[in-house]
Image (spheres, rainbow, N blue to C red):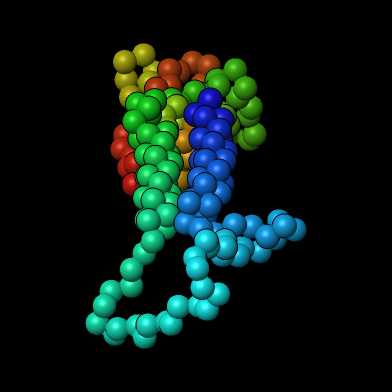
Length: 191
C-alpha cells in the first residue's frame, strides 16, 4: 500500500513540476515557440529595436538567480524531501519489524536407519525480520531424565523468514528417547 502511495506521490510531483515549470517560464518572460519545441524570449513592448548593451560580468559578484529559478528550486527540494521522508517512514517507522526468533522442528516420525545409525531430519526456521548469523543449535537426547547424548551444529547464515534443513545422526533408536533442540547462541546481522 505504501509503495502505491509513493508511486502516486512521485506522479503528482512530476505533474506539479511540469505545470509549475510552464507557469514560471511564462512569468519569467520565456515561452515555447509555435512548434512546441525550443524556448524563446517573449517580445517586450519596449520602444527600441536595439538590444541593450550587455554589461560585462563582475568576477566578484555572485551569480544571481531569477525569481522563477529560485521558486522552482525551492519546490523541487521540498518534493525531494517529502519523497525521502516517505521512503524513510516506510523503512523505519512502520514498527512492523519482528526480532530474530529461531524455531527448531525435529521430525522423529521421518527417522530412517542405515546400519547402526539413525538419521533424524530437522528444520530450523527464522521467524523474525533480521538475518541470523552463526546460530549454534544444540540437540540434547534424553532417556527418561538422563542425558544420553548432546550434539551441536552451526548454521552460518539464516535469512529473515528463512529456513534450513539438516539431519541429526544418533546411535540409539530415537523412538525410545526424547530429543530437545534449542538455539544456544546466535548473532543478528547489522543492515
